[in-house]
Figure 1 (spheres, rainbow, N blue to C red):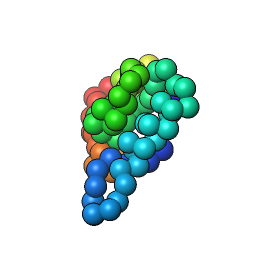
Figure 2: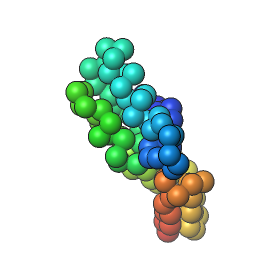
Figure 3: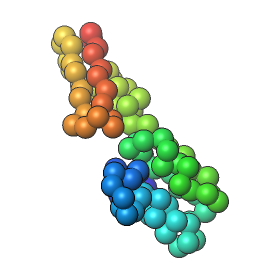
Figure 4: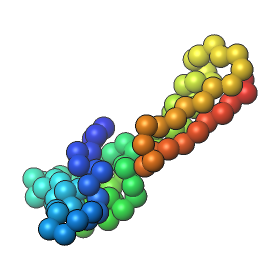
Length: 95
């Protein structure tokens, strides 16, 4: 699953607001999924929404770093930044 819909709705911000990330997890289990492999959940607590099936959260950062080092002809430093706080990271490489 390359994209987990409603992953940013992982907590209550106001009363009577649903936690949609938990609902999507329940829907996946009810539809018969027996394992979930996902790329970069918004936060780690989403794995806890799956009660009866195993969840593997894969991280894209190692693959991105490997690709930049081995396939791009870079001279100097690069900086990669995520557009939101949930996935914020900086990579500074001197190649």
